[in-house]
Length: 212
Image (spheres, rainbow, N blue to C red):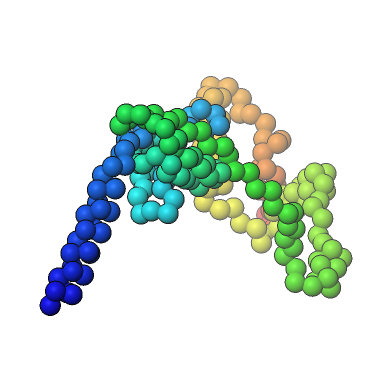
């Protein structure tokens, strides 16, 4: 019975001593501003005390505040920046201490990576051999002119609604512009040329003998 009482008493004394030693430590409120190497404030930086469960996070303006003890090692870390370790001096006096922290950009040099859309060298070789190089401007112009000529002389190409609308509006504009004057010459009008070739094909310009 007395043995158990003695053990309990020793445990109580040990816990009391530990609490008294903890209270004897000088609790310091560490605060300050965290900046980057351009001296701009850094928000949401993680501050952790090494070998403990204590920590804090800086606010939107980079300001932080955390209770610490002398000789505590603090680690300031943020994505994209090198971590900064700071050991609190043991001879601090008072309950408040200010520390401004500057984090440097963590630059990581990666090896060059070349991405190819081909799985094998044979596929790459085939793609190079069958490469269709872009045409020059003159060749494209010749093809466009040839397409226009085919549209003018062939009945297979029909004008769409938007082209017809533009033609009608252009005719109305010409009528209003030349009101009371001689009509303009339609030498450069593609629709007039289309009508001309259509008339040639249908034989409207062939001579017809009059029957009396």
